[in-house]
Image (cartoon, rainbow, N blue to C red):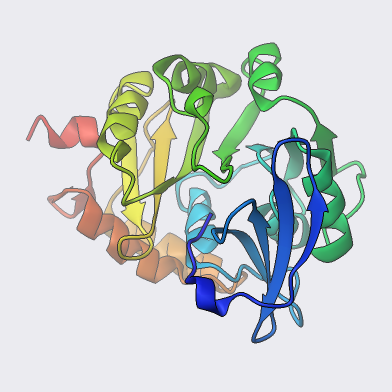
Length: 272
């Protein structure tokens, strides 16, 4: 989700959904998806549909900095499918499953946002993400939560029980990734709950002011969080991806403590 000023919106089409309306707008060559409000849920540059247009979506891909053997990725919330599409095209070693409850979102994503049809590496499932998580334990390397509606994060997707379930759905060394809104008055509450579920093995990263904040939770602490190692990893990834991984390392260092040239998880930082 990304917020946008109302005056930028034009050329709307829409499809009625059961509980809200799915809108598409286009401005300056960028197509955006909206759910019942002017808030941008996803954005796609029409001339480059598989690129990651919004900064926070590129920030989400920083899970690649911390884990180099990702095989399976589960996403709750399709939207325009930005990260799912990018991963499908640029990370052929990763099998992606995406669970989306709104059939109209799936239809719009495929018709207007170049989301591919299902195959052996890419599976969009129409269903309840909460139920899917409960039925799949120790099931994935990466779990991405980007589930917003017109009112923000649904309450069921920010409870302590929910974050506990996310940890259980991940493999023992899995990584949890969630997109949060920095100006949400409950942001600190959500962050504390994530820290509890992941035993303080958490990093956060602002991708805009006051905009989207990407939070990473680790079932197992990454093996090497030295800044030098992460910078080398970023250079390697930048040779393959058009993503500013080096800049994101700077953001991670700004938003989390660094001690003896090592990025500190929030639990480690509290013990310094």
